[in-house]
Image (cartoon, rainbow, N blue to C red; front, side, top):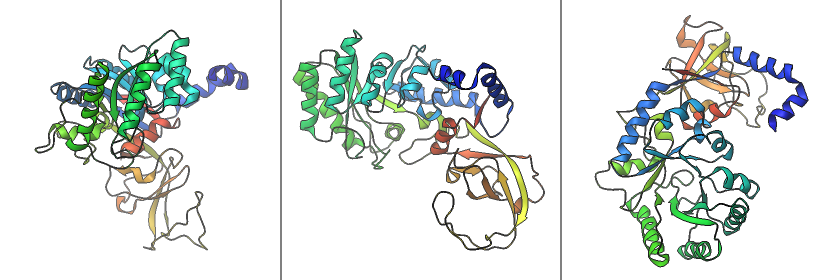
Length: 383
């Protein structure tokens, strides 16, 4: 539908021209080292498989970038692909892996959820009823996992009696839904770290539900990359009964996320953001005139350190947060950004850079997410 609309608005020749011209453009771009990424995946797959954990590879941070999905597909131990956007799930329908919608479905996307997702995470009875109705229309049985809230206060059923009530409704009224498990999300909103105490509640719920309804819940999803530290912790451990982890950031950035500890066996530089200098001039460090608010409604503050060599790169807040990237050249300091310009103090670099030079940056999870979401940042894979 989107392609048809674009063709009607601009015509076939114009669209082809725009695509060709975009492909010629070099920067900014995200450089992806596929060899390092595959080694990261191999390390974690081996680690989780030894614990008899099923693996959900979360694909949302890279917007299900096809080349990276091909790497995941090499590993049969990865049973599920998980994403919060149904559009991404649709993009890898050809994959043999089971597709999981890990964000609570919106009522307006119920038809697509049942059609394209094998499993969806849920917490609302009204949504479950709509999923049941749609599954009946499509002649399917749709698998659902109920999310529990163990204190992070994002999504999930908080009270045990509410959880058991929803289970009762699924088992007695919603014949086109199959309850396959329970899940929890921690650290993403409230910053609550998963531990043996809070995750044990999940396994206790599992036992009671299985006993009460004489069913098996094969997917007890004990969190995301922040739960990985429990596989190595000397005192805490992942409770018996947790059968699945949803891993995203750790695959891509080579670290567990509860304490942000890097794995020595993994690469933290799979992704490198590259930009290009569009201006390089000596200017004052303090703006001239009366200071008001910037383009984003914030009143900036500055320190006067005298004239500096100011570099401007062709990337800005529309693409990425300046606080979420770090220049690999430690002599460069990011001092601000507007929508389309990244402003840097390059005084310490001397004459090493000129207009047209490229500058590389390390990325964190947030900047990785926005980089792949931005259509203006090209993607380049290397091996």
